[in-house]
Amino acid sequence: AEEIIFRGFLLNSSIGWGRYSRASGIIITSLAFAFMHTQYLFAVTFVYLFVFSSILCVVRMRSRGLMIPIILHILNNAWVIFGLLFSATE
Image (cartoon, rainbow, N blue to C red; front, side):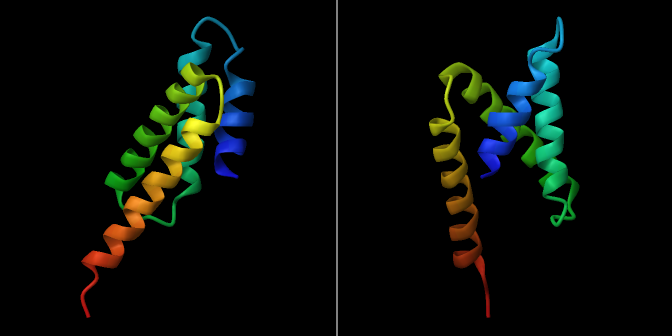
């Protein structure tokens, strides 16, 4: 659902806004994506989410579809979950 909202709707609607529309679309979309995940209180996480979203935006524009960004997003989430599972101490 996030990919449809951010890379499907928000990015597509913001890339037609002028000379620097692609860059501004990536920035707007990535800021919105990072701010949506404010439950993570660390600045480094915000930066990571912004960069990750920017990469997904570029992949979305180059692939002209949502399938690759969706797969990358799933892999990222799986990586984080597995990292949390295996780093947890009791």
